[in-house]
Image (cartoon, rainbow, N blue to C red; front, side, top):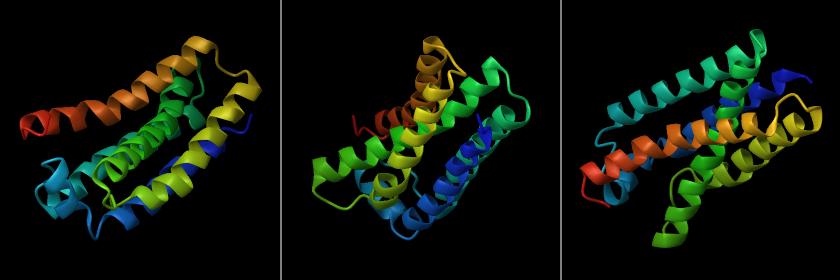
Length: 153
């Protein structure tokens, strides 16, 4: 299997940030309570981009069962980000900055990567489940903490 397909994740994420950046902070303050400033938005995205690049690099350059799970978790992470954008867009009836790229890019990229991993047989079922738990956890735990901290849940 050509693991370089994992590079699609940071590329997709970069494009997604371009869609989010002009309008995300005011929207997020209204519905999530954070980030409160554009600087916090940039910092958060820098941290997440570091995770995506490190996870992808580990899987590609040092392939092992563990690093493949970590690398694949980045694809689960972008899919979970799509779910957040879709949920808030449907719940509020308002455009969630990032929903277009999450729908048009994140979904096909993450499904293609998972499909490629399944077809290759490179990971077992437990590996796939762990990658999903890790990716979703990295997305949802900080989001839920912020919502709770700001009284949004």
